[in-house]
Image (tube, rainbow, N blue to C red; front, side, top):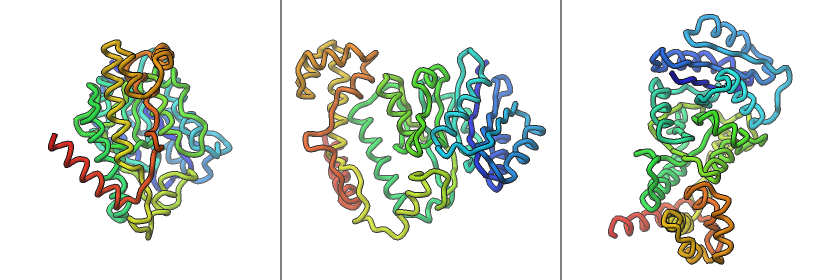
Length: 335
């Protein structure tokens, strides 16, 4: 039996909660595993608490609710509180924490896809699909660009725990993590935004297996007024009416430079040839040996030792980046 906690911060989501609860009840669940729904009500002043309590009374799952009188004012704090509620529900043993949002609806196979992925990895980043996402074509293009970069990355630097269908975006609305891994990382940082990306970066740098799995799908709100400053709503609002020539993204050539070197130093680490790794990254053997001493495995070593490209990580317009990526992927296929 596996103990699972689905952890959800809630702040004034009376309109969205019924859809979320319907989705949770529709999850494919074998009935053998222990499934806990953990709702952290973050200073709600609407009817969210009443709706949550009504769901607790009728749900086929075990539902735990905690109410904070005052809002945290910080998405990282709110998300971490929800995860701590999940840890308490799991108890002292091992278990799985799944994170989603109150304005989101997991697909019916989300739970089974997450469990399958977490059999192969320590952390899983699922794919987030925006409701009515086609309304923001430019955002779709940005996401498609970075998804293509994720595919290219794993062609250049394959790892055994990665999904067959990968993606790029990290969002707290769709993350799965082993409880012991979450504890060891210290959880979501108390950041006003970007707490999800920080956790995933910390996990990779610590040597944990991070899997970006597009089979784990959560649908989320495409609203332009959000809960977190700098969050998805702000991004969508900033892109409204913009042009591809004005949107800046990371240069594909610079990302490929990093991907190639991460693959090379990963291979050097596996061969115990730190001299080769030093030559790849242009550092002294002593420096590289010092970094390797603090890394538990090749994943941590690759994430920590490879620097930015010599000229820094450049940005270019989305239109230029798409053309450059077309060229790069064409060259890779020709090799």
